[in-house]
Image (cartoon, rainbow, N blue to C red; front, side, top):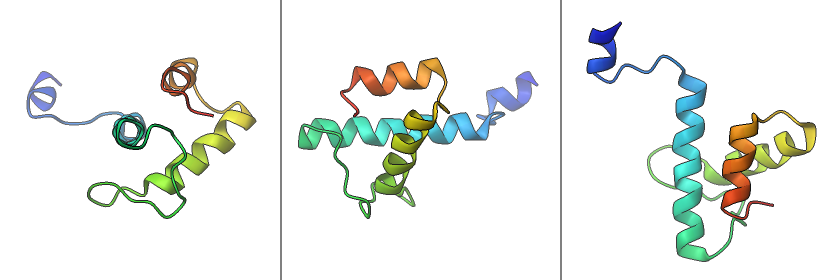
Length: 79
């Protein structure tokens, strides 16, 4: 397992993708001053940030996020 970790192997792909999209949202917020990402907005390679944000809003309402994910979104003013 250490050998896989040493080459950057990702064991928890959904968490990794969530972290990458969250980083893109942080970048968007820094550039635009808010988290109001247009639905069709993309950022970087193959990142459909607008769609991801829409899904996160639905996940917040449905209580589907982890406490850590919710705290991270709240920390940047996600609403």
